[in-house]
Image (cartoon, rainbow, N blue to C red; front, top):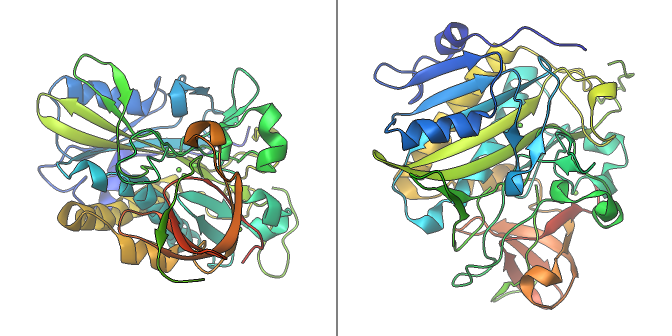
Length: 395
C-alpha cells in the first residue's frame, strides 16, 4: 500500500493564505485522518447553523458517497477527499457550473503542480479529469468517469457530477456519468472510469437531513463524469509505478484520476454549496478498481498533497469568485475544455429522455452560458446539458 504523508492544515494554509477559504475570518482548513464522508460532515455543519467558506480534507472515508448515495471506499493514505463549503445565493440555473469549476480547477492544479503539459491532462466535458489518455486505448475509454473504488454491487463509483435537464423548462432530465454504470453497462461505456469520481449529483439537503434532487435548468457537476440526457435545443448554424515512461512523459497507465460530487445544502445561515472532490494520489495498479483508473503515482507525477490541495484552493478561489459575481465561468472553461474542437459521440439513455436518438456523432464546438456542450451535427448545432461523451480520437 503506497500511502503517502497525510495532509497538514497549517502547511496548506501557509501555501495558500489569501483565499476565501483560508484568509482571516474564513472557516479555514481542517484535516482529519478518517471520517465517514466529508460531504456529509459539511452538510451536517451547515444544518447545525454553520457557515463561512472552509475546506475539510480526509485521507480516508469510510462511507463516501457518490450518485444515488452509492458507497465508495478508498485505501487509507493513497487518496485525498476534500469538501469545500461556499455560502451562495446564486439563482438555481447557475449552479450547474459548480461541478465544471471543480474539473477546471483540478486540471489547472495538476498542470501547475506537476508540470504535466496539456497533451497529458485532459478535461472532458463536463468535469472528467483524465491523465495520459493516449496511453491505454483511451480513444475508446476516455468517455468514462473515474471509478474510484468498487461498489458493493461490483460497479465502479464516481464522485462526479450529475447534470440536470438538457433543456430549460424540463426538470426531469439528469446527467449520468459512465462511472455510475454497473458491470452490465461495460460494453456501452467502453470502460468504467478510474479513481475517485462520479457525475456530480446536484441535490438539496434540507435542514431535516432529507435529500432530494433539484429541479434545474442545467447540469451540475471530480479529482472524478459524463451523463445521460437527451433532449437538445437547436441553435442556428452548421456544423475524446512502476510503468515505463515514454519519450513524451506518458507512463503507459492513463485514465481518470479524480471524482466530483457537488451538493446544495439549506441551513439556518442560508443556502450553501458543498464541492466534493476526490483525487487518486499514490494508488498503485493493484489498488485501482478498474484498469482504466489511474493515479498521480502511476503517471509519474508529483504526490505532494499539501501543495496539490493549496493550489486547488487557489484555483477554486479564482473561479468560485467569478461564479459568485457573474453566474458562470464560460470563457475560462471553454478555453481549457478538450471536448471543444474534438470529434465526439454522445450516447443517451432513452428511458430517461422518453425516446429519441440513442447516439449522436459530431464535433464539440462550444460551451453555452449554462455550461451545456454545443455539438455541430449534420442537422446543425445543438446544445446538450447531458449525455455520455466519448472523445473519438485522443488529442
